[in-house]
Length: 181
Ligand SMILES: C[S@@+](CC[C@H](N)C(=O)[O-])C[C@H]1O[C@@H](n2cnc3c(N)ncnc32)[C@H](O)[C@@H]1O
Ligand SMILES: Nc1nc2[nH]cc(C(=O)O)c2c(=O)[nH]1
Ligand code: SF4
Ligand SMILES: [Mg+2]
Image 1 (cartoon, rainbow, N blue to C red):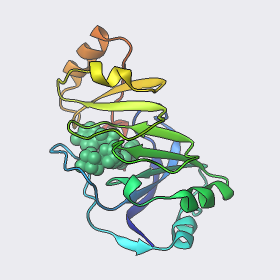
Image 2 (cartoon, helix red, strand yellow):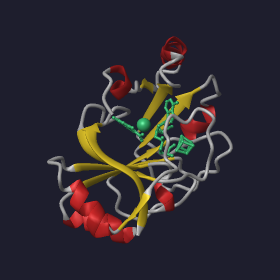
Image 3 (cartoon, helix red, strand yellow):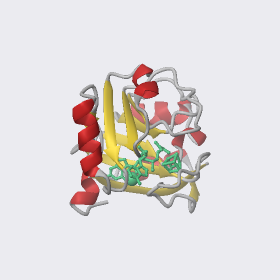
């Protein structure tokens, strides 16, 4: 059983795959307590893998985004294999502090201050910008680097930072801008 906060169908609002239809599987609970966290994830119900898959298969999209809370607290190779056998493309949103099972198709690492990174591979880095030094994150082994305003509040500062550090790209939380989930 895995503790699930919600499963919903929407567009990926952030980062590289912005605009892509996806089923979000939000796991419950987290090992960090970021002061800016925009998600209520503590509530949840225990679900079997069969029930999770059945819910995911209600929607036509191939992309499934594992998020939370911190999904790495809950997932393993069994769930990854199950979703792959169903033909799904698996993405994960993680704070990077825990190792992941092999085979996830797209890893989005959003490192947090004070969180020690344990990931060996990642596809994109997505930093929530609060004016911090980005240099340490630039050493991470990702192909894409995104800087995201915090709660849509400091967009001008984030744009200025990206213009000054052009290795980074702007990620807006587009779902919030168009008021979808
Ligand atoms: C809610 S977290 C869940 C996954 C994982 N715990 C993590 O932090 O990556 C999903 C994404 O939202 C970002 N996020 C959380 N609160 C935010 C906020 N107030 N403004 C912008 N992005 C935020 C996180 O950095 C992460 O990239
Ligand atoms: N539309 C939409 N896109 C998202 N991308 C990452 C999200 C998350 O909370 O992990 C999220 C979310 O909550 N909604
Ligand atoms: S690591 Fe992610 S889910 Fe956990 S508190 Fe931070 S932003 Fe929220
Ligand atoms: Mg969100």
